[in-house]
Image 1: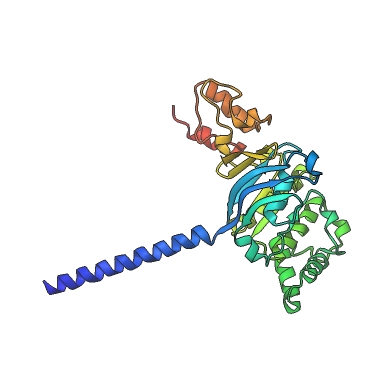
Image 2: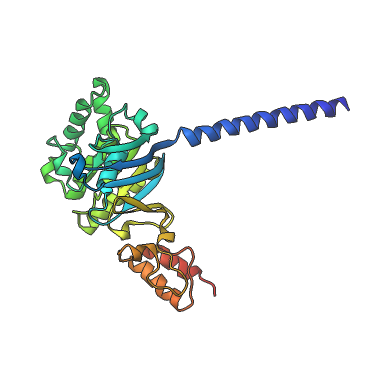
Length: 311
């Protein structure tokens, strides 16, 4: 009896310790891994008090977490780029609301870099190696670690064999990878890419997107801003922006969801976007009584969904 009582007490103590441990781990992942939190962010361009222009960003509240892939879409003028700058930590005139999160500490209070449509505007070296080294020097990186950090970042971006090649000889996609390497060299836990494939041909776009997805799989959070719906994947988080507001925050497949027998009822269509071919095929099949779930968003997922379909 005494032995059983001792076992009972030990088991109860172990379970209590385990519960406390899981509680602490839960608090760590909940509080320590919020990269960026915006509360009521509004950004209004400068104007006189009696003639204040309309806000570019209106009352945006959201969280971005470490390791998360978030795609931000919206038409031109919807406020995407301004919101991206606010998320990255740029100082913006006319901003109100609160921004907090782990990204501030990780970047030492400095803004996270943003990869833009035209990387040439930000590249400062003659070669990828020189560009990243100069970037680290400008950001006061410890001198003894600059070379190692630069070469590590270039290798991660897929430019290990091209690090000493003149920038003028690189393709547009390769120049974007140089800009991405700069972000990695600064150890930013968040990659912000503002329509980074907009000026690239399809092959270069696919290469850049594929490389960023690989970095994401290795643990880097990504904010991917685009107007190309064929770059979306179904299970990822999607933010849709309109007139400065976030009007959709959810998974991509739900953004394409239509109400039964109501063509044009999806969020995608209501915002004026043309859905990718795979989604349009799925819609056509649904009108014929063939409902594919989850809704396929890419040719690959469409082929898989059709092969597994059972009436």
